[in-house]
Image (tube, rainbow, N blue to C red; front, side):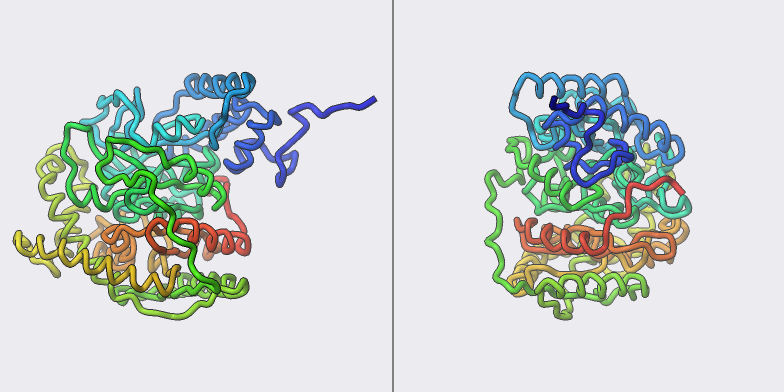
Amino acid sequence: MTTHPTPESVVPHGITSDDKPWQWTATQMASAVATGLVSSREVVASCLERIDEVNPHLNALVEVRPDEALALADDADRRRSAGEELGPLHGVPVSIKVNSDQAGYATTQGVVAFRDAIAKEDSPHVASLRRAGAVLMGRSNSPAFAYRWFTNNDLHGRTLNPWDSSRTPGGSSGGASSAVASGMVPVAGGNDIGGSVRYPAYACGVVGLRPTVGRVAQTYHPDDVDASLSVQTMLVQGPLARSVADIRLTMSALGDFSPRDPAFVPGARAAARPERPLRVGRVRSLGVAKPTDAVNASLDQAAYWLQDLGYIVEDIELPVLAEAYRLWYLLCMEEFRLAMPMVEEVGDEGMQKAAAHYYAVASDWWGEKPTLETFINGYARRGTLIRELAKILDSYPIVLLPVSAEQAFEQDADIESVESMRRLMAAQASMMAIPVLGFPAMSVPTGIVGGLPTGVQLLGRRFDEDTLLDAAAIIEARAGTFTPIDPR
């Protein structure tokens, strides 16, 4: 007589029977749900238990509706049982950032005055995740107006880094990175105009991708509010996850067309595959901050792993990024001056101090009140820098460089003083430079040093995320993964 295992006695490939569903990757969850090894309800219930266990300490997710999440899971199971076509994230828990519209939830921006700003419909990228079958689990925390590398605000409070509560989980997608690293969700939505996906991923030891501008449809503000030019040309939506495979899986769900995004490129073709052997340009420093020994060691280790599989790694310099970094503080921050009256009225003290410190440091380059001519010339220069970087990437389809010159900063180091902000801005130069130019980049962990994650950044050609993901997968395979972890 042949016996068949029950779903409870079977687990996805690559994990043990002792692992709970919240510990699985999104890829394992999606496969297990699609093949009937487990139900989406079991996966979601396991993640809800994990949220109950660790979120009270970390404060990564600021609004979770368990009954709603379980109802979405039950609907996912019903559709699977009915034989309906399943999306790539069918039944998989995903969190959404508080500055992204999700129907029925407040788009708070971490601001007390916006606590009742209930969204009537999903942002395009949220709608794409929903159509892909994702179970939207909760809202991840962000600093007010998403303008800090530290996740703290007067409405939702402070989010902690699960590796070390005295260090930032990053910002502005710090709630997303903390939730993913601690096992609350396998994938979290984030957005990046100044490192807000890449830096939180780095600070918490997970993977984060900033796609090419125009690759993922999005909205920036309510449709009746005009978005600034820098937001239209530099802001992107990107995922954070515990594995490169999960980033690739999530990106497969984020290509839907939306007429609501003026910068979206419908049907954008992936860049032609680069010639082999593939050349990698290693950039140790942009010349504005000296990387720590841990950061340099990560670059060397990642370079060795890539060389071991036939990549040619050569040291190069990229002064174009140093110039673009300073340009960000002209183009973005001068446009943001128009919002400063609102910030002064409803923004919290941390946001106001951070903005004042940004402007104080930027005045060294642009003066206290840059002229319109300076601003116009800045946008003209931007086009030249994009062309220069594209030419470099034609020879080196991957640039390997630091995410930051340091590991995760001490909490609130940005508002301590103007001088501390100056140090942070220099350390974060690539966080600002790459968005100005609109290219894709991603953060990949390489190890743990002194109890904190470290990692590297990969920069690539526009619409060539696949080449970055391939290289990131090699680094991950050699380094291993370091999450999920229990808060420390």
